[in-house]
Length: 303
Image (cartoon, rainbow, N blue to C red; front, side, top):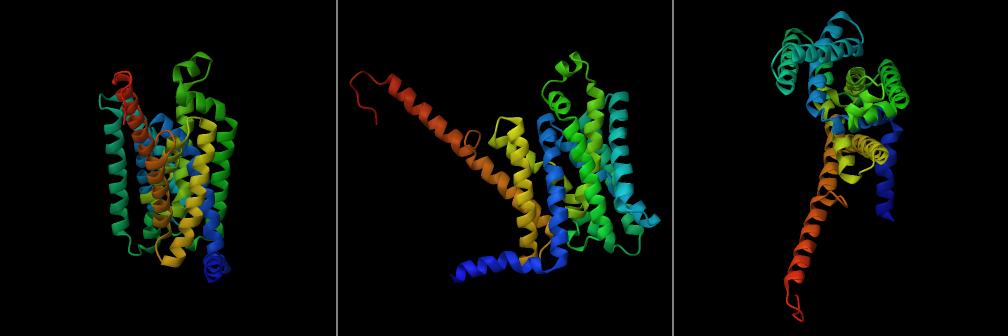
């Protein structure tokens, strides 16, 4: 009975504080939006691009801080700008796309770090780097909800086209869809999603939010619709549990959320029914036994 009471208090005591409700709301919204987009990022193979966009927004955030504008404004401008710059350099040079992505995102991040180092008061900017979901304001919540609603609405409206683009670009082009426009749409959604996740986990950990849920779900199912549902479930659960852990451990919320997501991925990697390491080992063991049984002479007992 004491254990049940302690468990109940573990969940209920944090909810006595208004900032925990705010943190939970922002974390769940960010987790949902990131999880949905992460499924397409995983299928297309854009993990490095997600990393690039998440780091490239730093100069925009710093400039917004200097000009007294909402962080989301600068982040969105520089996120979309970095994506456009990567595309231009990739199409107009012989440098391969992964190298272009590496150059652009490291250059943008370096510029952001330089700007941070020149601003006297760095408190708010450190929150952007590492997240400050426990201190979100009403304005921050409105920005997160609005940006999240835009991403989910567009994904819902273009769901079939985006899925076809992810699986078969040639077929998408053959039926009259424009792969280049769909690519631009996905990249724009990625930039907005990064803005949504900034308040929850900060710039440095955003890349995990837009990769880990989709990668985890990819190990657990071969059906895309189910993959979306699993990714959202994993991400929302990690957001809630990570927020609770950060309260009880007095630790960074963004780090706690991503750590729970990483744990979920590790469990899926090891124990997924069809694609996990354990399942693969069992299949190989069964195949080896079957092969030995097939080679054994008639009437010979097989251990």
